[in-house]
Length: 429
Image (cartoon, rainbow, N blue to C red; front, top):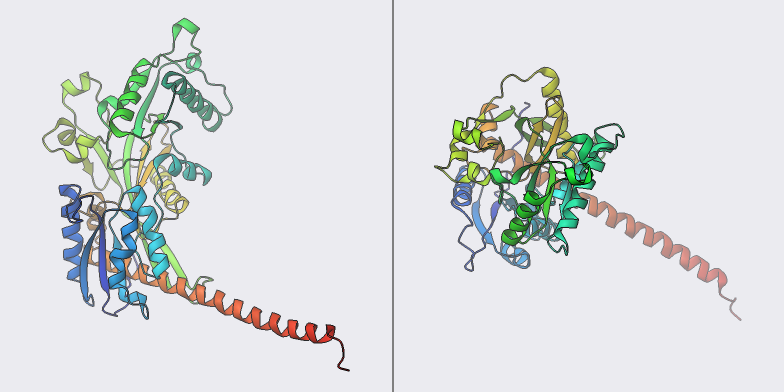
């Protein structure tokens, strides 16, 4: 990797924004969030040139501007940089608008997308994803909507994967699906029971599936989490995490005034070592909520990360890298992200989702990949601060060019209007 640039030495104040749902704005949503906040603030305070690091808890979208305005320097907005640790759908959609309003540099300023929207963007950009459909939380007939959901999945599989074959439950046979909360992150609501193998319905000659287990699962999920449920084909195979780090550099020859490059960090694979009892119960190699967060549970102990991933052919590595970079570009991501990908028996990569910003607790995926790539954590932080400053400065230059062009056009049009008015006016008597 080329030399990573350092941020502009203007002694900026860095505001570390995190989601704080408590009424006092200080309590964090989880122990993991507290550790991540401590790690990021601690390393930022150790960077040369930083004037101050201030963590700010954000409770709702309406409080974002009020929270950051006291630290805003209108004559030089780059003296304040927003370091974004917010993952909530609502807050992460509001934050870029607030920063744009104040011309503030912000790390990871891409809009957050719920899973169904994210997958639609992936597919529109030619990135392969598991076929899926959404069952609305406001459904009036869950059974009918579940049948419709499965018909849509089979239709999409027929079109995207089987060269126009008309797949039916009877022709496809047993079909395994996974159900996920459409708007949750951090594997919320995902358990081993979320993967269900559906059997063709023999009573109608295989025209439909026996959906009772899926209907029961969706009903419970909607009752517990009060949101839409995404049902999609389950890709039984290996699961990889690909971490992407972006670098921005000034380049006067580029149309935008800058050049961006993306570095893929070493591949990580999620491996499972379940007990025989768990295998007998139908254990699946999926990242459940327990596997991520609940120490002492079977899933937490059974699932681990292999870094760097082994037994990856050059062809598979190229497929994974193509999928990860395609996902990064499709969502318009910046700075850094982690892309989760599953691979089927034909070594075809299916992007599950992109995590932005991914957790920066030191023992989690992205920081571990940085370490494997021999990129010190402070160097990474310095790069994303530089990225944010450069993007904001280029944005202000673009706005100034537009304002100048409008002013010039108004001046020209004004002169013409004077001439035309003079020509149309009657001569003096």
